[in-house]
Amino acid sequence: MDTVTNKKFYIGLLLAVVALWVLQWIDPSMAWCSSHAEGAAAATGGHGDEIGKHLPVWSIIPFVGILLSIALCPLLTPHFWHHHFGKVSLGWAILFAVPFWYFYRDVAVYNMLHIYLIDYIPFIILLWGLFTIAGGIVVRGSIKGTPLVNTIMLLIGTILASWVGTTGAAMVMIRPVLRANKNRENKVHVVCFFIFLVANIGGSLTPLGDPPLFLGFLHNVPFFWVTTAIFPHMLLTSLILLALFFVLDTFYYRKEHERLKKIGPLEREPVRVEGLFNFLLLGGVVSMVLMSGYWKPGSFMAFGVHMEFQNLLRDVMIIVLGLLSLVTTKAELREANEFSWFPILEVAKLFAGIFMTIIPCLAILKAGSEGALGVIIEVVKNPAHYYWVSGALSSFLDNAPTYLTFYNLALGKLGLTEAMVPGALAVGVATTNAHFISYLQAISAGAVFMGANTYIGNAPNFMVKSIAEESGVNMPSFFGYMLKYSLPMLIPCFIIVTFVFF
Image (cartoon, rainbow, N blue to C red):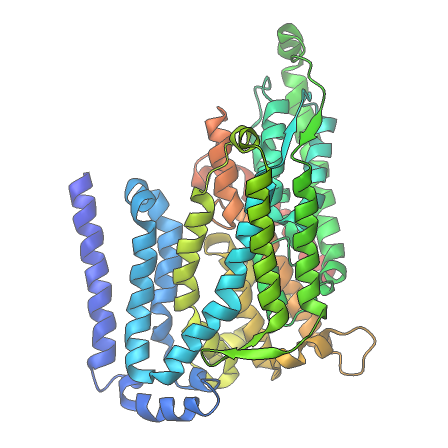
């Protein structure tokens, strides 16, 4: 189809979805409209805690719509998506927010304010802080991309990812890796394994590492719980992939060894790291997140939403640390990193829509078997199910809301509340819930690990691909990446993890 036909097709499809959505609201025979009054009245008593029992399953259509848009539009209409992704996100958000407010009023307002004040704003602030500070760190020098050197760099990036975030680690490490392999003919696999390990799996040990784990931390999962609970899974997965990479890189390196000898050595330049002050600022971000998990000075109400003073201080200080990085870091260092605000703006706009449209999905799952998605609760029964279902969705949608969705599913299934989570996860305590521990291990590993299955599984994946292509690496297409790299190399590894741990 030509461009004009493409536009007409997608506009027509969008109008059809909107029309069906509106009919669901105005037809009195529909489930929501016939019962919204009593549903709203029942939910109001607990600030909307009971609303999930009354929402129909089709109320999650905008959530599915925005995630499918993120997955498919960059492939089907890349030019349109690049210029209008923010409008698409806003459109899906409005499609849910307006009728939700009309029928539920105070309950709807509370739920919308709650998810933005408690989840979205801290989430974006942390990502912005890590992205901004890491963008001021530059690794220079002539490094020869031998199999051993490449493996060591991937190992360093994997370790770094849990402490500066997958986005921060990718920003710091991708250009040194590309420079080291500048004269290599076969280097696509280096970038793909970089996405596997640095942009995804490496971020599984702390809430700083990957957005889903930070959302878990915001919802009462202790900061260091994931460090010990997921470490064996992360260690096994990383060792298998690093060993596989070393073997594969050795094979390609030997194939082009004679050509590399003729080219000669790279121009010698001592290895050095510039912008070191930013490491202190990253340490400040870590300290602020830790502080918010252990210091409890009290709370206050903001627009009817219960807020904690320590979380407000954490967010303000992360902004201050990010601004300090911008002020103190030389402009040429950010230029050397080809620093741009586009990636973080893209994430902010898309997640603004995601967090709005995820409200009914989370509410329904919190309702457990009494919600419209009770059938899913019956199907997802054991840790292996949680691992693969949360992982599969994280591969094609987004791992942060996927984690939050299945986290609430596990809570609903076991009849737990967020306030009970620290006790349920405590070591050596009588109230420890073994089922919840195994479920959360599976959800955490699935959401973080399997974000590596596609370019859209985690925010840094596309960023790494784009930087590599700008450097002349001929990266595979969306499906080429899956068929040649992620499916044959990651899936067998994840199957091993399933049999060993789940």
